[in-house]
Length: 255
Image (cartoon, rainbow, N blue to C red; front, top):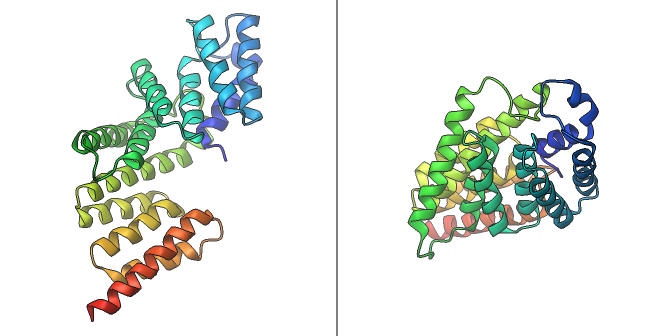
């Protein structure tokens, strides 16, 4: 499923004739329109590799395109969705170079690095710092933002803002877990759920943090909430069941 951002940026490309009559962004030639329509078709077909290829073609052939930020964001998300860690980081960094205040890129980088960092990594401390820097800067920008990013309809911004806030706190929670700061991780995951109560990923991570903090009853009840969620992905529910089983065994052993 595409995020709100992808839908919005795709809409921006689909409605090029309308945008051309409004206050930017707008294409500068019919050739640029045709190139952007290729990106649109790729996104609609969920052809992630071709979408990235055609985005790169637009950026190379139309260096002054007003769609640069949107296209880089779309490429970053396409790379993330196909599980290409290196490409996701590379595009995310390009987004921030083009626009240091891009919240979406900072949240994506924070979450992507967090999900790929392991306790045994030699560069774990550097990764944790990157996670915290990206996530905290994103939260600061979200607190002071008065208008949605380019390409995001006003009506969709409140939901996207909640989603990004939740994801940023989720990344900070993962950073705390990597440092074995379990009470702090619990607080971050709870804050993530305050922003987006239906975030099943943050909820199952909260259950795991409860297990690590030896709060077994809270772990079990939180895992049960995930298991009861009709729209939670099967993989998330499987992880929730693992946390419940683990908490149940550890609770019995502690008696």
